[in-house]
Every structure is written in C-alpha cells, then in structure tokens.
Image (cartoon, rainbow over all chains, first blue to last red; front, top):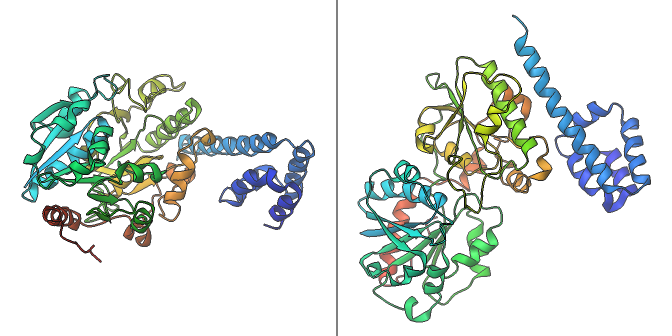
Length: 83
Length: 358
C-alpha cells in the first residue's frame, strides 16, 4: 500500500486507473508476476517518465491476461498428469 | 382478476413466461399480448415462444396500435418489464391517466440494471413501480415526485429467495454456463471462456458442462444486443479437441436450473435466477481482455459483497460459495411479492393509499 501511495503521489491522476486495479485483489498476483516491488516501481516509473498513461494500462492488463492464461495452462497440465 | 402481460422481444418474453404461471397459481387470470414491432427489430422465433410460454394463447398487436387495444379496460392490471414508448405516452396523458375504467400499470425493471436512471424515467408515469433494490425506492420517489396515485416498492420475479440450497446435492451433475450476446465482448474474452469451460469439462469427465445459449445463432439477428461471436462457432474453432462433455444447449432457464449442480455466468441476470433456484453460482469476471467489456465493472460493483464473485483458480476447481445473507436480504424477496401485486391492483381501483410492507 505504501508503494501505491507513493506511486499515486508521483503520478497524480495519470496512475489512478492502474492503481485502482492494483489496489484490488489482483495486487498480489501482479506483484508475484513482476517480481520485487523495486522492479515494479522501476517499470511503472519508466512508463511514467514518458507520461504514457496507456502504456501503464496496457502493461497492467497484459500482465493480468498473461497471468490468467498461465493459471489455465497450469491447471490443464496438472489435470493431464497421471495420478 | 384479469392481468395483461405484454411482451416484445426475448427478454420481456422470458419475463412474461416467468410471471404467467406464478400469477395463475395465485388465482389471477393472466393473458399474453405480443406487441410486434413492424420493423421486425424485436422478432421472437416460434421456438422462443413455445419454450417460454408453451401453448398458452397469445394475442398480437402492432406496437403503434397499442393505445387502440380496445380490450384494455377488460384487465385489472398490466404488468411489464420493458416499457414501450406508446405505453409511456398513454400514461403521461392526463385524460387517460385519470380514467377510472383503465387497468393499473405495473412496471418492473428488465433484470439486473447497471444504469437505472433512464429506466426510472421511463417508468415514472406508471401506477406501480417495482425496483430491483430496496434502497432505490426513496431515490426514485425523490427523483420523480408526482401528485397522481402511485405506489413504489421493490422486488423482482427473478430475485426470489431460494427455498433451499443444492450445494450438497450429489445427484445434480450438470454445470451450466449462461451465455450472453454482448458480454464478454471481445473474441479474445469469449475464447478464454471457452478454454475455461473446456478445462472444467476435462477435469470432470463425470459431469457435463453446458453452454446454455440465450438464443440460437439464427435468432435475434436484428436485436439491439446482437451477438457478434457466438459460442457454438468459437467452440468449433477451438484448436484442441473439444471434450465430449462440453456441449451447448438451447433448453430454457428453468429446465437448466432444475438439474444444475453449478451455474457460471459473467454479467448476466442469470446469476440472480440461479441464486433464486438455490444453485451454487459463480460470477466470473476475470476473463482476459475484460477492459473491452463495459458491463464488467458495474457487475463487479453489484456483486462485490455477494460472495459469489469467483476467481479463475477457484472456478476451475469448482470451489463455489453461497451468497452472503446480508447481500441477499436487500435484493431477494419471498413470494409475498405476488401478494403485494394483488394488493396494489386492488388499492388502485379506488386509488386507496397502500402502505409498503415492512
């Protein structure tokens, strides 16, 4: 949460959409996907440098979609394994 | 007591089909009226008609001719879920509104309503308005004050408290996904749904997973909610072989809910139907490319505290929760709804004041 507050302060309104998604229940999964908090900060900061709102949005969404597809792949793989 | 149930398209037909037997059971004499749009925009097929109303007699009238329907005064009540413009105009006309020989016009909302303000306005001239949520009653009255006789309450035939839960009924094996025409919206999202259902089917070979089609690809072609990517086509296009226990069905909602072990939907009112039927229900909103679906966020807000919004991992493992009591109690009612309909119609006759049930 501290990270998000910090990000919100830096980004102002531009990050509101991404922050809303991240503060929801997806936060943990996104964090896992991205690795450390520092890496996350670095990626978002990089996007912020160019004030590319859509870049942040796309980043978060792409991560989310990728994560859902991974959950599905892992479930299918687990089901295919013989007992 | 004769009640008229007008319908136009599949959504209002489903509503009329649901209410018709309930009214009949309680001693009313319901009659069906198919209001036909001459442009064919709201056409319903014979299959949709027979599925929802069986062999019940149906009268027909053109939309524009509704105000001239000379048998209107034969009825004590007209109950609708969809408001048509000629009906609204009639009820906004003082000379008609003040007639003592006219029926009481009762309006429900069509189902889950994410942007109710417009629907409120469309129903403001009705004699009785049944809103989906208890907390909307005062809001409606504030937004649409009137000096005419009017009764505003809450409750919906689709949102009735279940008599029991079937979460432990092992005799029920079928899982139904209730499809919608426009949500999820994108082809990617809908392909994801097919993949999820195929995975559930593969993991549960002793169960059948049905994609319950709201309409056949050949139906509702001119409907305002026209389906762009239908599930039968997406299932055919699946790269991997389709599990034999993943099927489509065009059965009715009530048929599906009679043997459903679980119901899955994204943003459909079917979630309310299945909860009403005591079927464990998953509202699944984590489809890929959800951002393209404008109905997803309002559905999430509506169901946020319900306890039935289900994550992908839980859905795949069929870990479904029953809804929270607090969420249920302000949206779902028992069958006293029909007693209230009866009381409203009786009170309307001599414009008697009627207290809302506590």
